[in-house]
Structure formats: C-alpha cells, structure tokens
Image 1 (cartoon, rainbow, N blue to C red):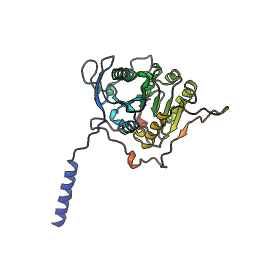
Image 2: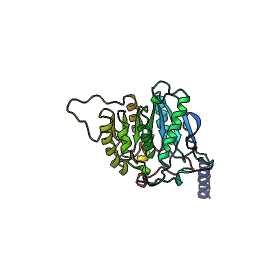
Image 3: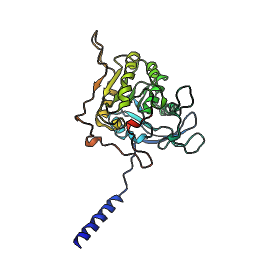
Image 4: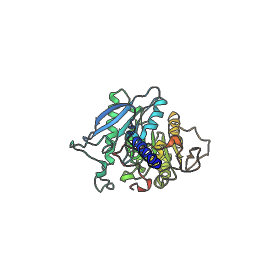
Length: 307
C-alpha cells in the first residue's frame, strides 16, 4: 500500500508538472506587418536604436524564424543598437503568399541559376521591404546593417552587394551556395565595407565555404574590412544562440574596421579563433539552445543542409 501510494503521488506530481504550459518565445519589440514587392505578407519585430549608430536586420536560416535571435537581440538592445527581426517569406508568421493563401518554405523551389525559379533568392525582396519600412520610421538606409545565418546570411549578402549604402554585414555559418543562392560574386561586388564571418569547425559545410568567402572578401573589401572568426565547436545552427558568438558580434559592431597592418604583413589567412572558455562541443548553461515554437521543426542538423 505504501509503495502504491508513493507511485500514485509521483505520477500525480509528474502530470501536474507536465500540464504547466511552456513559456512562449517572444522577440521584444513592436509588431510590424509588411508587404514585399511581389506580394508576400511579412511579419517582424522592430526595436529602435537608443544610442548606437546602426539598426540591424536579423535574418534566420531555412526552417527557422525570428525568435532564433532573442539572445542576440537583447544584447544588441543593451548596447544601444536597433534591430528588425524578420520572419522571411514562408517562415514563422510570414506564411501568406501573394495569392492570399497559406504558403510554406517546405514547397519552395531552389533550382540552379539559369535553370528555373529559386524562391530563396527572392527573399532579397523581403529585406528591401524592411529597409523601405525603416525609412518611414526615420531610419536612413546607410545606417541599416544585416546579420544573417545560413541562407539568411546568403540573401543578406546578395542584397548588400547591390545596395552600396548597407554599411556592414555579419554572416554566421556562411555558405557559397545554400539553396543554390550563390555568394562568391556577391562578395566580390560588396567591396569596401566591413564584413564579419563566424563559423564552427563542427559544421562541415561552413568550415569548407567560409575560408573561400573570406578570400573573396579580402580581395574585394580589403584586409582591414574582412574578419573571419572560428567560433565554438557547435552545430552551426546553434551559433546565433552562443554567448561567445553574441559577444563577438557586439564587440565587432563597435569597431568593425581592423587597424592598419604593418608594411609587408599579410595577416592571418584563416582569421582568428574565438575563445569560449570550453574545450569541447558542449554548451555552457547560458548557451542552451532556445526551443522553437511547436509548429516549427527542431533546429537543423548542419549535415542535412541542402547544397
């Protein structure tokens, strides 16, 4: 009887704890609804800058959403930066297509250049819609930077390449052809502006592609403007939530241009390592990954990325 009572109490306690609803993930800021040039209804969160010169557009990767950036957004706000966290078309709350019907990234086409449509390439129009809206809020285009991860970083770079007023770009887990969005030429046309790239050696795609893009950046943007950092050994999809990476981004934003190198010096070819205070692939307690809302898939395994 004692054993049965103990089991019953334990089961009741477990049921009670399981019934507690999960705390919703909310990116701080003003809710904004936009329309892209080609008719997509887009959702985002905006927080104006308080003291820093830039407002950053935050672009998630495939299958993710703007809440991925909660930790970074809070750090940016604490440092005085503004931000616009965007659900790219077909993701999160940006799930209404030009025809007014529900639409998802799961049905997007990503054909090679010249062989058909690429719905991911068209995400540059989402960025254009944000920049246009920010202009109505008194935020000049030349103060709007981009932070993106995975294919979000790729489309962010492609947008910046043809919009020379974009002051700077941050790429996490950069790739040369995520979802057939090609970036080497975009980096060539990006030219004389600062760019920060952070990747993890645990991400086999980004660790292959990041040095390639860095070589293009050094040639196009110049040694003083190009920075490549090896981040903690985590799956690439976790980099946006890493405390060490977030600190690196905020620090770089405050001083994105390297000091002039001594005459005859070429600088490191593979960039610098980011110290995380840990020697393995585990997350420290404050780097635990934020769960995505139930309707979204779990963060992707980098080995399953499309190439």
